[in-house]
Amino acid sequence: MQLEMRTAGDAVAAARVAEQELWRFYGLTVRESRIEAGTPSIRVRVLECGNTSGVPLVFVQGGLGEAWGWASLMAKLTDFRCITLDRPGGGFSGGIDFLTIDLRRLAVDVLQRVLDATGIQQAAFVANSMGGWWTFQLAMRAPERVSRMVMAGCPAVLLGTSAPLPMRMTSTPLLGRALVRLMVPSSSVQTRDLPVILGHPREVGQRWSEYEAEVPYRFGNLPDFQRSWRTLLRLFLRPWGPNPRMRITAEQLRNILQPTLFIWGKDDPFGSVDAGRRAAALMPDARLEVVGIGHLPWWDDADACARLVREFVRTSAAASVAAG
Image 1 (cartoon, rainbow, N blue to C red):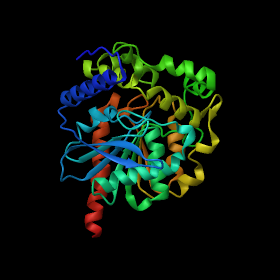
Image 2: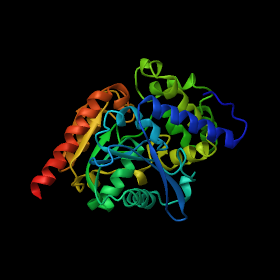
Image 3: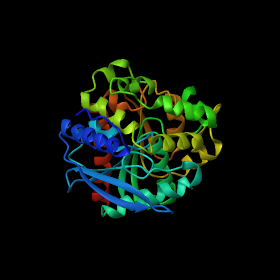
């Protein structure tokens, strides 16, 4: 599987091979399509797996939004129709300078177009971190498209939450460039430390398969990664905390009516469990479950997260049938 990267084309080819091996490792048959969204238009990759006639679940990943991060959780939810995407800026979707766009408008446009392209009027969403921020935008601006939400890990800039200091320092223009270059993994061995950075025990990365270690290395070396990641962090962060303009506020949470389940790692470095409790208390219909340790709780305990997602979404589907 090891492919030497001499050109941008080599980097893309190596990332594709690594991702295909990861899907195969988890027994997932993934179908891929493309949509166009935003102004100017951005290419977005959409992926599906699981039961084509099952209840639809839309997964929106954090970071730059690469779909591969959901593999271990989707593998336990294949009774659902699992739909995910590489968010613009990440993976095999188009790269972005996030400082030049209206991200709220883009988030709503992209997620609605994903639903339209897959023939879904309304769906339950499972989101992490920056993907949580995106999903909240859709829930606020097109609430009829979102039946309920699972926020797995602290949503980006929820209330007063932020990011660890090294990530916040990337918001400074010159230092940020250097720090983002340092974030690019130099090997699949180095990527095994990624879970530690995200608040997980070291053994999480150490027990990863070779495929789980290879994919973040290859995706971190895709041609658009550094510009997209650097400008996304500059948009959302300041050295002292979150950019106030991008925060999800208490007032916004009070007006989100969709049933919401927060699944929160006990030591999530992006926001404490207390922040999750405050958010759930502000919302009309929300609750919090503490599962795992780090920022991506299914990396710690995929079985528990899958059980909670299944119960939460099945309850919604059963209630809809009863109401009908």
